[in-house]
Amino acid sequence: SAVISQKPSRDICQRGTSLTIQCQVDSQVTMMFWYRQQPGQSLTLIATANQGSEATYESGFVIDKFPISRPNLTFSTLTVSNMSPEDSSIYLCSVSEGRDSQPQHFGDGTRLSIL
Amino acid sequence: GENVEQHPSTLSVQEGDSAVIKCTYSDSASNYFPWYKQELGKGPQLIIDIRSNVGEKKDQRIAVTLNKTAKHFSLHITETQPEDSAVYFCAAISGTASKLTFGTGTRLQVTL
Image (cartoon, rainbow over all chains, first blue to last red; front, side, top):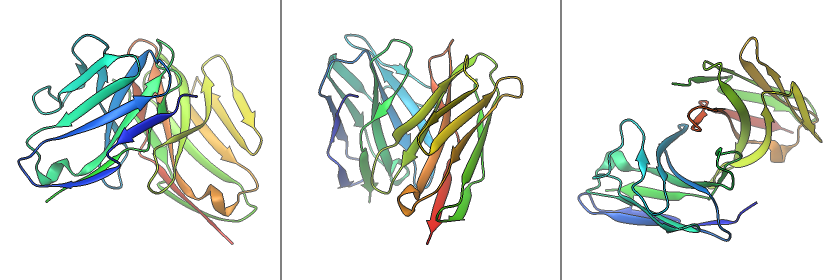
């Protein structure tokens, strides 16, 4: 399966600032996704990153708060904007080589703490 | 939308015993059911998956069973080892939405 690298692996940020998380895949993939995992919780899909067009956001997540880019088939970024302590979570990138999102493989995530 | 429930939330077994984790789903259109293992500080790792046209799938000590009528699927780990200790998540994809919905997770502890 594809090797997925996320940067940074962790960060501590001040409230009100923004952070951009990068997801790099070692091969071209069809689908890329961004998830949030709050402390001790399950995974929640934020959005599907679409190459060359706007991301598709899930209910409860908006582009102004979580802008996403996907300039090509191997790279995507997620920005967490105007951060507050409630944004402290693990943010995970996942990829699927098929159009039907099956199977999905995950990176190791970015552990974000907001002071 | 899809809703996936997972039980138990925690499970402690002795090394060598079997562990079973159960999930139910709500969307009868769901057709793909992966299981992930998440170790501390890591992302979820796909360990086994099953599609709706299959009732059971096995990979060494790990097996998954699917009952489409009852809309539930289970993960079975035999001969558990300490390195099996982790959080396990079930998930389901609906063919119409192509969206992966996760269960709430099971923390498995394998004791010596």
